[in-house]
Length: 326
Ligand SMILES: [Zn+2]
Image (cartoon, rainbow, N blue to C red; front, side, top):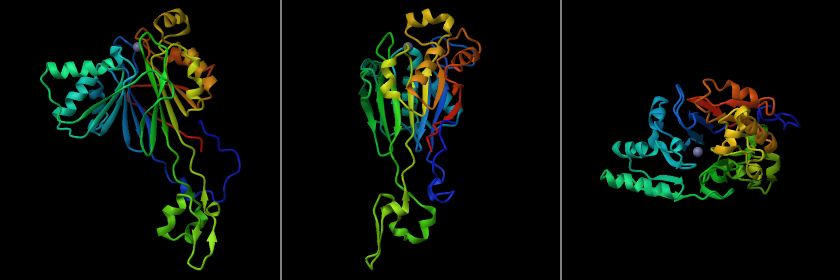
């Protein structure tokens, strides 16, 4: 568990607010690096935040992974591509094409390095394909903190990763919700006033009686956040941008024995990923992007845990909850 339940508890063991939270999960569709490995697929993740689906990276075969998990990929309206090494984006054209063949009409937004636009355009042109739906491309630059997507529930900003070609990570942050009604006050708040009270208004009755908002509500739940770091060498310059995130995904391509190889290819060891998680004070660390030389990723986990105990291995099809600090 990442959250702390210490500290004073507001009256009522079950403030009205403690009803279940909107989802915020990360499904890992592929955990492999570069070359195919038995049972592993290349990088792709599906983030569900408040029932909105974001796709992060789209390695070869991502659409089949989504299908096999029963995900209707027409619900995805935002796709974020970290960089143009094939294991992170070669599934994108297949997905774009299937969306078209299945009659999609709603907009698709793709965020990625500028060259990706030319790659998509060339393939569409060469195949004589006129998409039935609007595809909007948004070029990204590796600038940490730059916001690329923003709506009422979520913002997505970039991380400048350290890799052999321009590479961006992504931070997905939930926006603050409404104030929460205190359970014991519910019968004092007329139903038609509840939304206004949740928005922070005092309650004023026709006879002029006023109940201050603070007596009726609790603060909104702390917001939740997720950071995706792939591919990158150990990069302490990321710290201010990932500090305190609830869940950090960080690549862990190699064990410490291959630290020199990690440095040369601008990747990380599991121990380096754990070190960054420790320094950033994150809630939980999720490792991925395992080199195909490791038949089991347990070795990588064993090297990370002594440094950052709250570490897990991503697995194909695994669903990881972003647990906030309640
Ligand atoms: Zn790469």
